[in-house]
Image 1 (cartoon, rainbow, N blue to C red):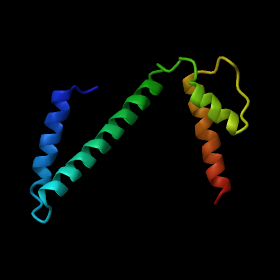
Image 2: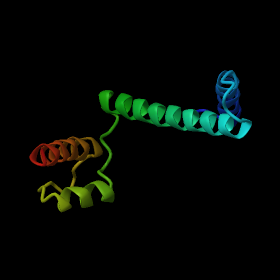
Image 3: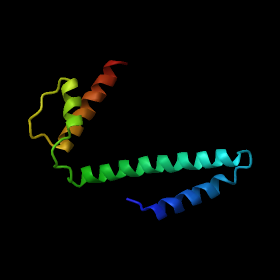
Image 4: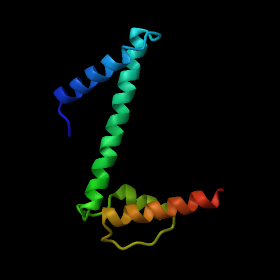
Length: 102
């Protein structure tokens, strides 16, 4: 996880690149830089989750949110389901639900 100084440095770098766009006002440039930084944050969180899942570091108990979502989809699961197992089941049922809607 990045500290405040690293995030500030990233923002300044992005803002400098966005500032090269002459047609944007300063306010618009700031908003674009913030939006880009937010997207980078989402990407980094996704990468961290993928890495944890790939490394098998997800043997923790599934969250209540995951269990509730599985229940809403009518999925039967054991009381000791892990985060990784719940995530895999949710991916499967969500994909199936999307495919039925097509």
